[in-house]
Image (cartoon, rainbow, N blue to C red; front, side):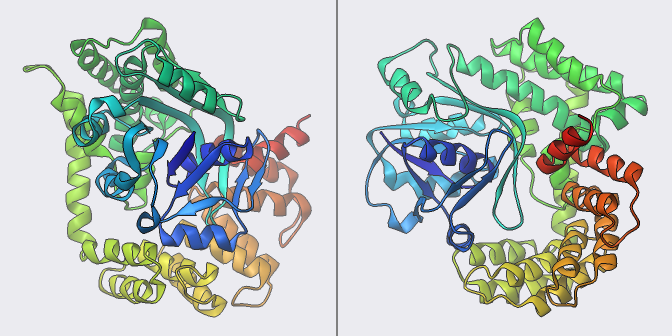
Length: 463
């Protein structure tokens, strides 16, 4: 079975790399920028509690290189990128191709069915805590790694059993589900509750509890569950109890990725999660909390467009970088940074020069200057990279004390990789006096955010 994995990011890259390592015929559909990044690191690199991987020569194609139909297309993009992804992978869909989408929400199912027909579409759900590192490494942050799939109509079929055979035994939990649509609704209710609460309050679950917000979260859960019930997909009491165990934890550091996207000034999937859920509610339903959540997210997007103008230029710069035109992208990033003061634009200029992306030659001096500009304006990711630059002499002389100081500033602003780097230095006395108590504190903070190396080091220290 020929598999086309749409994307090689945290989710698609992880599951695709596992399948490739298990001998499956997997090709990754990537943008030129991601291809350059993979080639620069010598292949797909996965760091995981389940075992690290290095796929040295992964099969990569860009949209204009697709020449054949595939048996299985696995879609792992963000919901707001679905339309452009469909345009990219459509030539790979033949008469017998199966499409397995692994996205948040439910709207994507309607879109895919309308575009390709119901017979081509399966239901899918990914369960993994992973992120993409600055250098393109896939960082699997917790043991959980599961891929659920099934027929939309429920039950089994020869074709879904064939998919099950291909996906099983590849180093992650592959689960053929009898009622995948119920699973998708359950995940929808979970995400709308956790992402809705943490994005509205701009705080962790624990923070919200300690601030007296439990009643709000419980009410939001009830509203979301009522919509699922009205659509004949009522969550089980067992699953509702699972969600309650999450939202009632006063020590939880969990904050949904949508809320983190807001903190970074990035795009969100709010329309696909909150907006779509409201659209599926029965007329007259009491959704005061969910509507407040959605209103907040829409106000955020409106403000983002107003304050970050020219927003289209920033997106166009990213598109140029994806297309391999790094020089043009950098000039546009600079214009956006100068006009608006956007930290992500400053960081993009620095990051592109640090790693030599999109045909741009590496230039540590330029990277250091732009990281400094972004860090001095409060960008935690730039602070982390300044720590890296000072530690390794990129664009400046090696200065261990300065490296530790920048890692501390970034850690205090919530960057988990900076927390880990600071903890290492406090443990060994690299640039700072040894302080094992504080080192343990930062190891625990990083581990609480799922930072893999911190989890492992903490286990060793507390054994």
